[in-house]
Length: 221
Image (cartoon, rainbow, N blue to C red; front, side, top):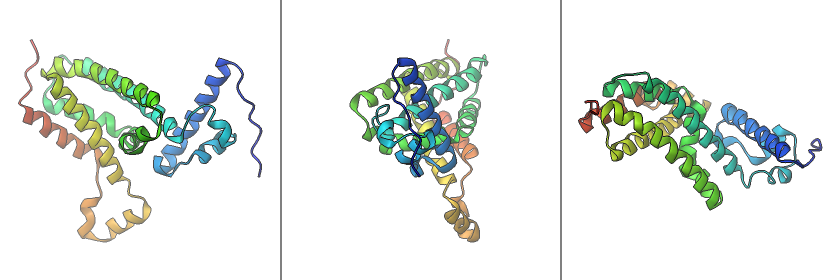
């Protein structure tokens, strides 16, 4: 079956609308299948355009998903900071709980966090990679302000905390989503039950241990 004609955008507004449609399609497919299973052809078909036409808007499949990762950073950071900003004080356990809850509530973002360093960042132009890294640096700085205020974390401790949280969230989500065949194997053999992971409680324990181990907890003066 031939795909419907997709007229090339002629104005900046039309181009932006097409880019939004492509991102929306990739987001929906990623949620339904997992990022690794979505091809550029899948996205083009979902939007109703030829793959060659889609490449006029994004250089690679990986750039599309890297854009969604940047979007995820902004959205997660805003939600996390809204909770932290409302607190006059917090313990390491409180902060770990907020991090774990807000990350676990965003499975697509967790999937993207795992894929970004493995392949997304490696298959885009240097300019696209730079733009993505600048987004993450900005959000890390904003989150760091709250971590410093509540727990007195140093700049290095902020970087370590956020890297641990996002890195573990991505890894744990992959473990928690093994696919139907592996899940059946894990549930059918009691010896493999440890392979079935609940993201939020494990992430909360890891982050609580990390923050407690730094010896922080006294609000900055």
